[in-house]
Image (tube, rainbow, N blue to C red):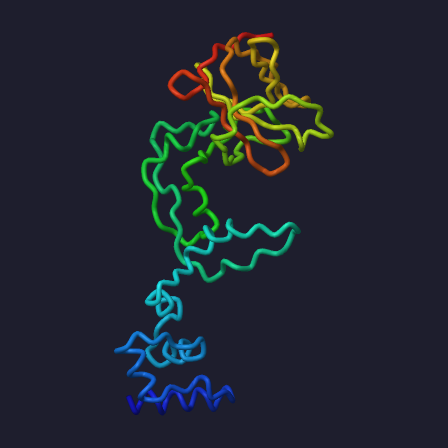
Length: 246
């Protein structure tokens, strides 16, 4: 303990702050009585024992890898720089996809992820939330081009499951839907015409308008947030609508 005290005194002297010093009695309290050290003594212990401060914090139940999840609990109303995550170390992301995945076709990634693994990309931890699924716009899918070019990776909110009707001031406000049909997936705008759901491509897209002959609901939400929403229906939880060319 005397060696720890002497080392801590040198650290305190270097920083001109006695808070870094750890007396033998205080070290004993930390080791045997569960006393929580101050932020200065946490630093000192990390230096002396050659430990990452994040590991010491974990001893007391503070896991910096939870930052990404906890950020969602505080939503500032104004835009700002996000600098809270450099200290995070691990995150769960897809590391193995089904071999049948075809990059040319739009797909529901939630169904083709075979294994999730741990990698140092903290923001991607939000991808494991239950009410979201993730989609990939196929390299040959130009339905929402140029707004959503081929290769786009989408976050899909499965709780938004009805077509929203309205007048939109711009294409960035208009909801975009991720739709599953018997012919595959597509990402598009949707409108209702009686019992039919009209699947509308972007006005600059070479794709044609299609009509889903079904009264099943489609997922919806506001646009302009960078997310696309998945359609949901009553047949097995999915919208299996036959498409007819308009």
